[in-house]
Amino acid sequence: MKVLVTGGLGFIGSHTVVELQNKGFEVVIIDNCSNSSPEVLKGITSITGKEPIFEQFDLREKSKVQDFFKRHDDVQGVIHFAASKAVGESVENPLLYYENNLATLVYILQELSIKTSSNFIFSSSCTVYGQADELPITENAPVKAAESPYGNTKQIGEEIIRDTCKVNTNLKAIALRYFNPTGAHPTAAIGELPIGVPQNLIPYITQTAIGLREQLSVFGDDYPTQDGTCIRDYIHVVDLAKAHVIALQRLLEDKNNSNYEVFNVGTGTGSTVLEVIQSFEKVSKQKLNYKIVARREGDITAAYADTTKANEELGWKAESNLDDSLSSAWKWEQKVRS
Image (tube, rainbow, N blue to C red):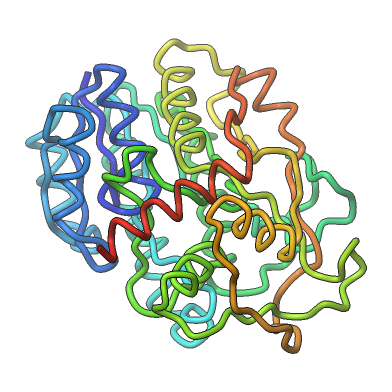
């Protein structure tokens, strides 16, 4: 069975391709390599023993999207990762984000809408909740006004899919709201490789430990948490990848309750920034150079998932803990810099 993975050479996309191929799916990747590299194909192939089909083009080119679906009319499912994802950059260049994250989604859904049946998994985010009123966060928590154009594209993206599903019963879709993906494949053949200065905590930690960054800044220690630093839910990327495969199988096997569903994907456990640093120092045996600095604009105090719905309805549960994630991220960092 053929599955399209857009952004399949990226961090989460590449790990999902591995899990799909391990389950026997035939995978086609579309990626424009704006934030990834064709080299990732070698890592995927070394893990699975099979090279996925790869087409390099930009999904903003509508005619190429149309041509792709004409040539691959046997695609049974689409997992859509391709998007820009840096919050700061989205504030500086909102139109780039609205074009790249929304126009591409529309073009894909237009092609899926004319098929007799189609299955679509959307890469969404817990940013849609903002600072939630209650913790842990359930799927019923209100969607708050977005803090950034990036966050807004995830909210609008979900609305576009929901509205499309209302009028097209042939389309079945699941939006997965990720919490904080981290770690790397246990083989260290693929992992997170940010271009430029990392926007996320874990790669900044590993790059600081390896000597690429001089110091890690901890933004604020005066939040109302146990040690004053922000709390997030860090999920191992392999667990997250497996959730995509299970979600796709749910649609393919007609186990969904409606043709548009939403699931949180996290561990259900929140960790403070200082707890993450302590965990890293424990698994890596490295002392991390960090300092407390002023709060960063737009950061919320705490976000961690209530995973009951995913555990019970999807039949998925995170298997790895924070130590596992940090250990694999450190193994990957050492391999990349060796």
